[in-house]
Figure 1 (cartoon, rainbow, N blue to C red):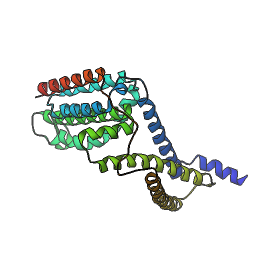
Figure 2: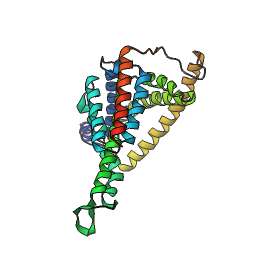
Figure 3: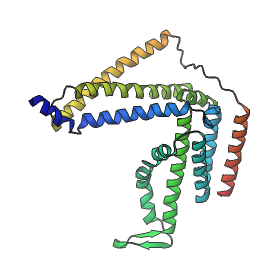
Figure 4: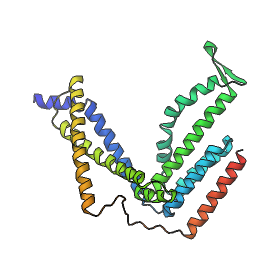
Length: 281
């Protein structure tokens, strides 16, 4: 009975193991959800992956070279329209981008509000002032980063990762870089699943609330086991790749072929990029 009471107490304790399991499961669920979106029959899913990579670069140039907030806002609205036509849930899409951007980008943008010289907009205590140029600078940074990240997330959500890697060949990126990106993506998922299994097995053997020292020992032991298993798995994977004919570059079954829709979409992106850069001068 005492063991059951300790187990009940440990379930209410959101310690290191519980938080890590929740985060790992959430990451895996988000990844699987993204793969489901890439298999839907939407606008961007039907386009050639090479065209989507080139279109992403052109739109990123338009966002970076534009000096008009209205143009950047219009480009962001266009991204949301593309997401809607590609059957990407807008709530999920917006939350995935804007949950972290205000925190990380805001750290950089916030000082610009106070230190940028120009006409004073608001006077604050302690001699601080908010200037119009400072607010504009912060808005430019937030909108540019938000729109650029949204474009990248939209590409990843609507295109399988293997197709993106193969499409990078059109940019003449070295094969070793493409190979490293592909293996990194695969190992992230593999190590997440492995960590989830390790922590879940440890959690099933914990019947009381662990102390801080025990949590630290648990973290160190888990890291050591994970490192050893990752080294073992990497050597086994490489040997299996060589036995199946791997020679320095992975080959996929995907075949790229431009259709009429691809040419129309590419022309539209080129026109939008030109207009956005011209209007944003």
